[in-house]
Picture (cartoon, helix red, strand yellow):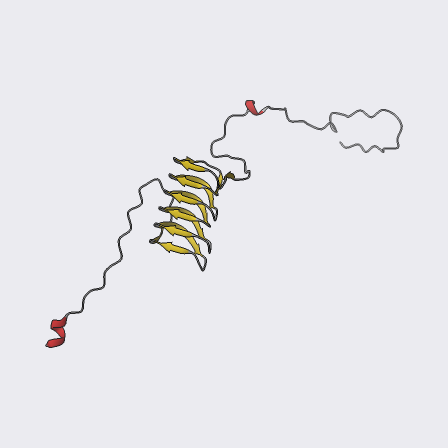
Length: 170
């Protein structure tokens, strides 16, 4: 079944059918069927600090924004740089905010760093807010914050009930 040959043995060495390595057929990428949901991991797409985008951004990859965006952003992972300003809704599996966001943030994991300024509601599965972060809005935990259904608008905080003076006089 197996034959052992020594490198020092003289003579030609021909592979036998038992010892010949089997090789998979070579297929070019155009021979492969497209695979849904599969993506290769690469570095994030970076929008530099001197870039202004007016419109929506949609990707299944990672995005790092250093400039300004006026529109909604949907990505796998979004990093908002310290110099960035985003005016619109953010929807991503992971959102890291170091800059300014004016609008709703929806993500499985949301992190506001110490330099973050967020004006809007946050819908999340897990959240971390570092000391020094500025946040104006409400926070709501959901099991599926990325769901395509419309998230109900959060209720305003309840006003304090006025004390009843009639109860004190009796």
